Image 1 (spheres, rainbow, N blue to C red):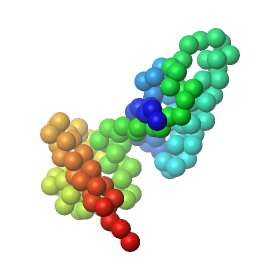
Image 2: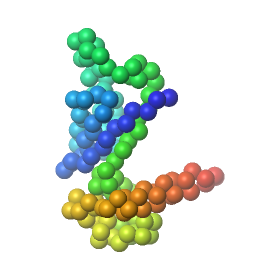
Image 3: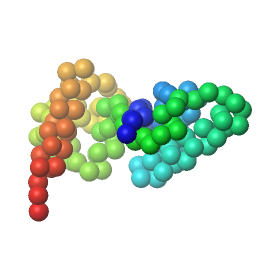
Length: 135
């Protein structure tokens, strides 16, 4: 199954996304991420329908089965998962102090590339640990 990369960003009240394969298809929604994913799929379908009606070309990937690969910037990632992890939990996972994580989550400062890597590695390691658990 092919992957469609979706760049996810934070807005004041929700999320926005752009899809590199579909220039001009930008989606924004207030509320939770579950609603966002549903609205994203509907928006892509509408965008493709309009392209087809106008006789415009579009990437063939959209004629097959595909999955979304959500790529967050650090601000939107921490904003989204701030509802799941406390700042102290993220500090224990990443080794980055809570105050700095708060600045990243609120967009007051941008992490250096090495800090971004630390956050990504820590969350991926946690994900791997969780998928290894059996009940």
